[in-house]
Image (cartoon, rainbow, N blue to C red):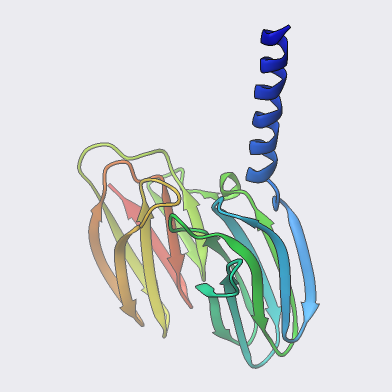
Length: 200
């Protein structure tokens, strides 16, 4: 009897853990103008896919349970489409989004597993994106090209929820290469233009 009760409790705990991990998966919020979107607080990292149809600022902050802004997720002017990583650092717990906008917007929560696959050696994109890849082994480099006017920032993550390696941090048009740490499995790109990444 004791073993049966213990088994039930273990299964219930596992179910609760799974539910928390996917609490915001594929949930979409729509709005217009400035709003605060409250969600069930979670420390689990995930993706947010944004779109904005406007002419002025589009700024999104991740806010924790204490009402403190912790991550600047989007900061652009005019129309915008992009995917970003939230809870990228251990200890972060998103509980709300503070959105500043002059037009209509959408915010869609997605699990990290839905990140775009960096399957081949070279990948091309435009704007903000999150890329997943098989964990690297040994000596690897990444070559980057960016055709834009503003920030081009790329981070590599060996463990989701840990501090990422800053691979590139440039402004405007750029070409260069950097080391890709062993175990890198996720890469985030912040850009205002077209970009290319090639790993070797």
